[in-house]
Length: 254
Image 1 (tube, rainbow, N blue to C red):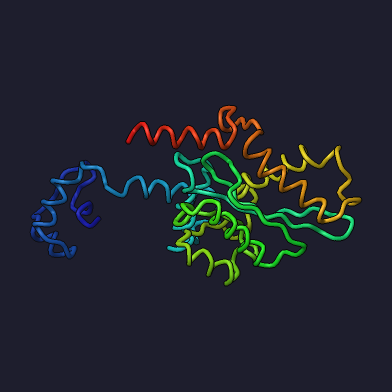
Image 2 (cartoon, one colour; image 1 turned 60 degrees about the horizontal axis):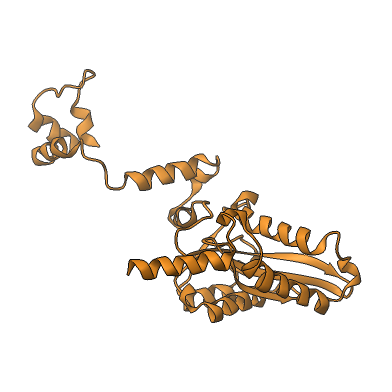
């Protein structure tokens, strides 16, 4: 701020205020307004601190412009939330089968880690992610307007996917350029849990057909994961139990 230039090294104001204001392109009124308000907290202080933190996370983040900074601030890489159907993460994983590869796409709610939408295909085209979003919105119409975070894969940057999220007023958040792995760590962790609990040491997926794998995975996520699996991140609650308690609390507060 130009008015800081009016101070000496000991913090005192020097010379004739009107002269220095004129030289620096300020005004006396502006100077005295600055004095009256300089001790008040800046209304954008929290936002500025969050932006500084994002820039400090990686030496390349200082190149962030308005759009990428906005996307980083949307999620701030804190994958938890205080209300359901407001902030979600989505990702794709690959499983080898006897007759090809199966690609599984899911949307997880950051509030209770429940699976909101699930889709599976034998290719990784954009339609896989579009179907995942459509399935989630069919089951949870209130998902409209939520934040959904993803990596920068071609599926999530495709025009088909972006058209779908625009139609439903979804706010898109994506990993930083370069695909830093911890940006989508929550999804990677859930895929790893699914493969460990459902597949590894139980089945040789390369001896199973794609259709057989689909049945296993549908049942695991939509029946077991959402309704019967204890989740330590939820304090030991099942995702749907945590969601039920959330709605009950809203009713009591109404």
